[in-house]
Image (cartoon, rainbow, N blue to C red; front, side, top):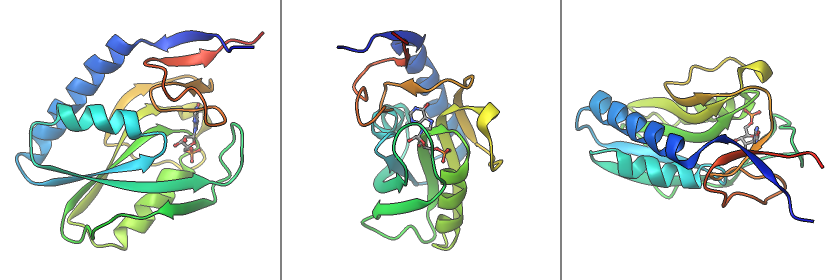
Length: 174
Ligand code: IMP
């Protein structure tokens, strides 16, 4: 049976918000080179759009991260499955996340990146579910705050599926 979805955030609304975030980021970094760290897999679509919305000098790195546990719960145990290809020492780093849910993943990544001595490290997340916070982390650039619903699309998956939906949706219960 094919899943059906209800649209939570349309492709048009995502595009408008991503454009605004890109402009804000370009303004804040004011021409200083920036390393966008795409946290895989969920951020691949967001990072691709965000990078093109930033009018400035940008380098892209990919970080493979796996949070142990299948389904809809993050365990908080974060495993790096693929590391950066170059050092970020003395560079401005922006971690690009699809969603901050409990906050455990991004808190872990911030700790990890601080040991790598960047000039600065900030967080950009497309979505935030404040109802599920277990570790409070400052999100420097945020797309949308959403309620406590499991969402898919625009890079986000449920059991590795639905990342290709162009909008953010909620799976309809049969
Ligand atoms: P956290 O460590 O609980 O903040 O979770 C971070 C990761 O869990 C995200 O980067 C997503 O990969 C995944 N995740 C959390 N909530 C959702 C959701 O609603 N849909 C899809 N993936 C989610």
